[in-house]
Each structure stands twice: as structure tokens, then as C-alpha cells.
Amino acid sequence: MSTSPSEALTVAALYFDGHSARAWPATLSLDGDALLLAAEGLSRRAPLATLRLSEPMGAAPRLITFDDGAHAEVRDHAALARLLGASGQRDRLTVRSAFDLRMVAGALALLVIVLWGAARYGLPWAAEVAAPRVPEAVVAGLSRQTLELIDEHMLAPSRLDEDAQSRLRGVLAGRTTLPHALVFRHGGAVGANAFALPDGTLVVTDELVELAGDDERVMAVLMHELGHVEGRHGMRMLLQGSAVALFMTWYAGDVSSVIAMAPTALIQSGYSRDMEREADDYAAAALRAQGRSPALLADMLQRLSESAERGRKDGAGWLDSHPDSAQRIERLRDRS
Image (cartoon, rainbow, N blue to C red):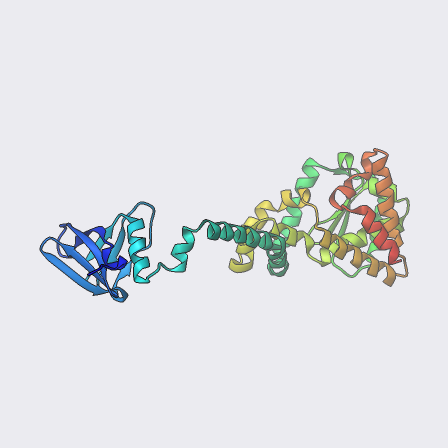
């Protein structure tokens, strides 16, 4: 009588009865849809469907557990796989996938795509949702700390005369209803620059006022900066720069991590292209509502660009944190 391949397959194992620490050398084989275990002085037969098979863990033995708690340890993983294959049984897909190089490579590629998507789209979206949840007192506090840090390390007291400062503050107050505070500083190495802090504080350097040549161009730049305030771009930038800070603010309501990182991040980070477009759109709409042309902002960008090309430090600052000036100039002129 011939022996079928499944009947000829045997696998060496150690059997533990669940009542003592003794290990019996045993062999495993198949009997139809049942597993046969044979050891010295004992044998067991159990349907495969009633057995629990542990997942492979490196060189560790795999356990076949019976319904009464007894189990067999198998160290020959390849032989056990052949036995299972002959029975028609297969490991779960998750187990098979862990040993399939194509599946592993595919999973890694998917992970990279997911992480890229989270960083490219997920974090900005979550930061936009979380930014309004930051209490106004916290926004004011981190803005104050940032200005103090800037004054200590980057800028100097303004040399612009008080009449000019008062005049520009008055013009701006008549052009916007957004809460704001306009302050002036001497730029020094920073050059011609203007930036908005999250609480609406607008910092303008003397060099930018000089380069603008008139109040209207200064106002055009300030309308752009107010666009960043209106869009909460500074806070969004802070939050999406740190996934931990974003989670703590959005989910737990803890803003301490934002406060700690805010001054340095606000100074060093530039806005995204989308944020720059939003601020340009806000400025263009505000200028048209005031009966003025968005070309004023385009003209100022052109002056800054030309000044930077001539190697003058006073024209580089604002462009450093507001990139893509050529595309922005063209876009603003098209909307004039």
C-alpha cells in the first residue's frame, strides 16, 4: 500500500502536557484533517481546526497548543511549513507577509508615502484647525517674548523721526479694522524688513521705509503682513513645525511647548508658498477696497528685488522670508 506525501511528512517536536515541566521528544504527522502527535508511551490526535499555532519569532520555537493547555514546540520551521502546506493549512496573511520580501518592500514604500502625505498635507491641515484653539493670552505672550528676543539679538531702536512714525501709524489705523500695533526698529544686518507677530504686532525697519520712498508702498507691505495675521499664519507655522506641539495644542489644550519654541521659530522660519499667496490676495483685496492698486505691492517687491541684486543688504531681508518674488510680482500686476 502506497503512502501519501502528507502521511510521509513528520516533524520533530517537544511535547509538554501542561501538568509538569517534563518535555517528551515527539513527532508530528497528519491524519486527514487532524494532527497526530506520537511520543514515548503516549499519542494524541486533534483536529487541526482546534489547535492554536503561534506566529514565527526568529529562531524561537513555534508552539502548537491543544485545547487542554498542552503544547508542542517545533524548532524546524521549514518542516512545519511543509506539513501545514500538505494539510491545506496556511499561516495568516500577516505572518506570510512578514517573510515575503516583496510584501515587506511594498509595506515600506506605503509607509514612506503615508509619512510624506502626513507631512505635506496632514500637518498643515491640522495646524490650520488647531491655530484658532490657542488662547489669545498665549498668542499675546509668545508675541511679546518674540519681540523681546528680536530686540535683544537682531534689531536696534528706530532712528525714524517720531513724526514719520506717528503719521504711518495714523495712516494704517485708517485702513484696517484688524487689531494691530505698528512698531519701528532699525534693521542693521536685517536690512529692509517687515514682519507680523501672531498677535497683530507689525514690525517695520527704518530701511524698508526708506526703500519704499512713500507711505503708500509701506502700506502695501503692511496689508500683506496683516494678511498673515488674519490667516493666523504665524501660529500655523509654529504648530506644523512640531507635530508634538500640534498634538498637545489640538488634543490636550497644552500650549507650553508652543510657547517654548515660538520666538526662535518665528524668527527663523519662512512662510509657505500657499501662505504667501493668501497674504498677497488679502493685500490685493484690501488695496482695491481702499481705492488703490495691488501694483503698489508689486512695485515694492520689485524695489526689494532690484536692491538685493545690487548687493545692498537693505533689500534682502524681506525677500529672504517672502520668496518667489518674480512670480508674485507678475501675479499682483495681473490683478491690478
